[in-house]
Length: 58
Ligand SMILES: [Zn+2]
Image (cartoon, rainbow, N blue to C red; front, top):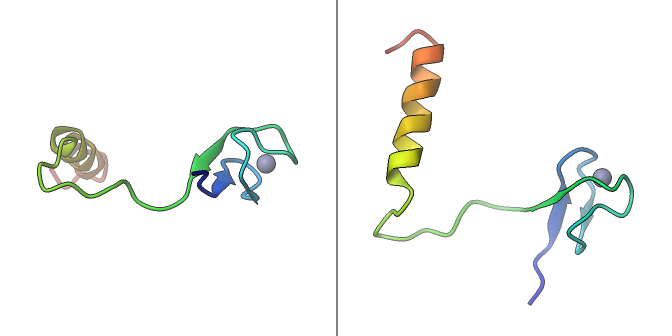
């Protein structure tokens, strides 16, 4: 099954991996699949800590 994709530069929707309008990469729309195991928790925490550090809050 194909999912709808959104171009990363011109924001056009398509079903192609490469945007038919500007030949940029198209990405999946919507959040990542939820899992109770939270396999990417360490990456999520690292990104949040990095954002807080850059904002001067950590
Ligand atoms: Zn495009």
